Length: 91
Image (cartoon, one colour):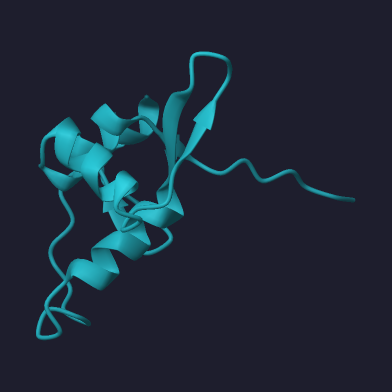
């Protein structure tokens, strides 16, 4: 029996909200190659895989912060080791 795993895809606005940066900063990170993303459909809507956001955070974190655990906010879920609020995962 095979199972389908659908990766979580985020819009630039959702990624910006999670990172607490501007949407323009997300676009700059994508353009510079620091954040993996791709475009969907004819309109070219930007989508960022959740795992790419996690990797971006790992690379950007100061080495002293790696391995430290922060308390989870109420309703948070884990995606590839990163905490997302339940509100962010519903979108």
